[in-house]
Image (cartoon, rainbow, N blue to C red; front, side, top):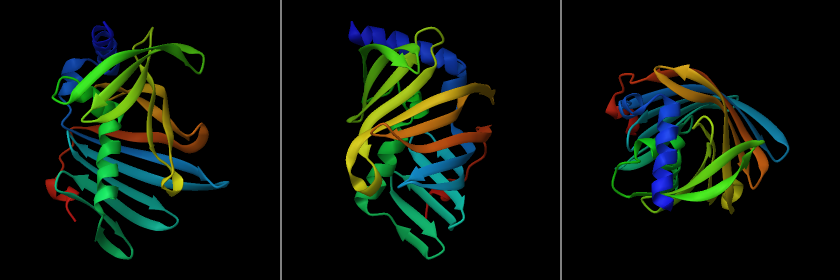
Length: 221
């Protein structure tokens, strides 16, 4: 029963995102965002360009007062490029990057019919006063819980156990608002991340490209 209910909820989420043909037709996705991060009482701003090639290639270009940085991951490896040069990321760091990408709500929705994906209903609750039902997803051994609006089908929250500042384990929560059309999809244009309930990063989308041409070499050092 829990699995059947989860399937219904995920179908509602797909419809809220624009429908199965639109969601499943996304091969590449590029998003540009302004990010404000609060860490240790200090605030830092950055512009982030995130490029995804589904199901398993991800790249971020980060521009801040500290300079330009690129991080990317694919099944064959992960690297970081900074003003100091280009370095391969250690195995654990690369694994964390790939894991975080798989846990993104859009990557999870696209993987819903694939191998290694299991979902079950995880009860009801509220997100900022809105009634939701939660779906617990185990995708390739990583567990993520999505909170889905019972009226609209929109995914309002994602949460999982992960590593935070300094590598300490804890709960990472992302809350999604400001849903707007973009390239045939309906995507949240604001994401607020929390670390054990404390403010982390506030990200606002400024541009979205669906199925842009992407060179596979972008994910190589």
